[in-house]
Length: 443
Image (cartoon, rainbow, N blue to C red):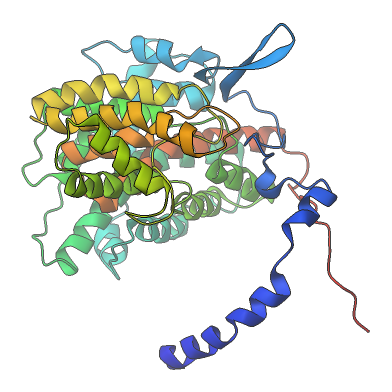
């Protein structure tokens, strides 16, 4: 059928769907249903147990819940402790990935062995890049990656058996392959859609995940030590987040049905690509560019605050009334990932001669919570989240925006894999939530 004809038909049915599917908001309160599985304070409804990670945003004080600086824990270790445990001479992604997957902090020998395994596994089946990734390239690299992930299942004889051993092997393989799926997908799009030059570098098995990502991306395959170090830290901070996020929950839901890892990860990818989940840092970048264009003096705090007020009042930018990168569904006083990343952002800004941009970011970080508090009735504190600075980091690293969310996936595949393994071991029943019908019966 002609697509335009089908579009006209779909357009004519919009109001029909709205009139028959719109559920009054008061019914959620009437029946005690938490919309989006969250209460009005943003706290998620308890749906499972995990030993993989933990988020802390409130602490008990004299019998009352009091907002506190945010904490993120991986397998019993505070994220600040883990970042500090990585020496200046090493990259930590592989070490922390081992911790999340297997629940034990590896010694130097185990880390070296795991890094070696990842390095050897960082290759795709013969002709896969040509026959799969380069076919039907698209600007949506997440879709390209998802197609590749599902196709990889056809090359794996252990997909149907779905044993724990198979899943551990497949998880390690996917962690190793994700940088290739992301970067090669981008190069195919850039070549065929943007008329850019085509270059496909092979990964170096002796290099870290962060180093290989930059090596694969850049024409000359070069990078500085600081660039790779900052990217390594960013990957660690995005690796896992409490288990209650949308894509990780998706992983566990699909896993509970007995489906294979490729299907579960493909579903998680489809979740992550949504702008309400993995694309927030792109919105921050778009907002910052708009601010740069409309605020003539980046040192004038009143001028910046005034423009932020216009953004909140839906007068400028995308007119949605949001200051992107501010606030979080869980954290209140602070996002620990943002605080850690900011230290590295400042160093990178000096190396890249982007101090003026950094000063603008810091001004907005200070002013945004003030203007939000003045104009909005909020239930908890507002602070910058990790997305506020991550896009700026990627921009300074020369990473195109089409790869921002795929890079998130390169990190989060570790968390997804850990939760899948935990779900497989503890799985008792398929996850099946209940929905109350509020339809009107018709004779």
